[in-house]
Image (tube, rainbow, N blue to C red; front, side, top):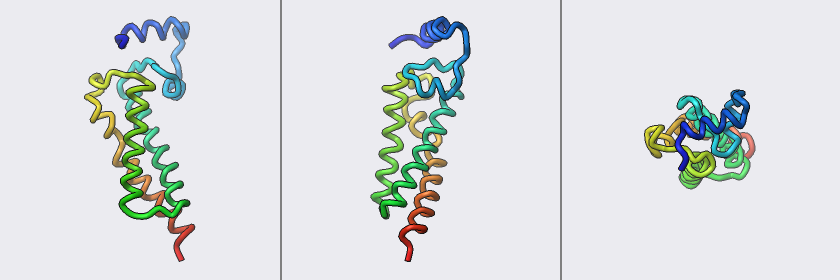
Length: 127
C-alpha cells in the first residue's frame, strides 16, 4: 500500500494543485482524503443513500420481519466495507479501525431505512 503523504503529493501533481470536490473524490478510486472528517462524511451520506434505496425496495416488494432487517444490515455493512477497503483502499487504522468505519452513521441509516420501509409498505400493501 502507498503511504498517504505520497498519494497526496501525486494527487496534487495530477490535478495541477486544484482541489477536487468531495463527491468527485468519493466516486474516484484511491482518492486522497486531506481531512479525516471529509471521508467520514462521505461514509455517512452513502449509508443514508443506501438506506433510502433499500427501504424503498423492501416497501415495494412486501418484505416483512427480521429477515428484512437482517438483509439490510448485511448489505449496508458489506457495501460500505467493500467501498472503503477495496475501492478507496484507505488505511483503516488511520480512522480508528475497521469497526469504527463500519459503524459510522449506521444507526441513523437504520432509522431512515425503517421509516422509508414502513411508509412504502403501508402505502402499498396495507388493507
